[in-house]
Image (tube, rainbow, N blue to C red; front, side, top):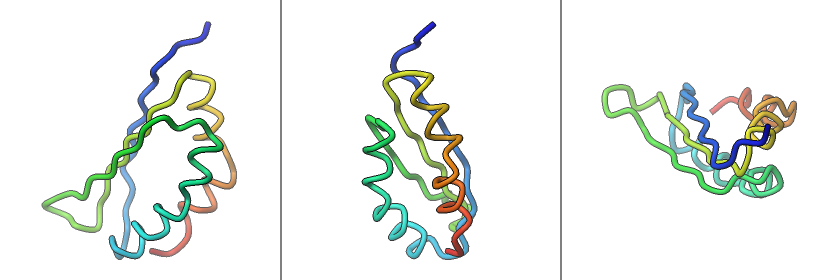
Length: 80
């Protein structure tokens, strides 16, 4: 069953928010390839090294494929 308009929300630590955001922005092509239709980044006002990311996808299958991608996991483990 295909479900449209899927939203994925992730919390992620970032030792240096500016460095992390720079790398996140550089990964735009990865998000486009994964059919991310919308993306938002929030910095926790009480912990500036914690970010919340919201990605929108056209289907549950697209979200699962992106979130299970080894390239994404590698990118998230880069020191930032």
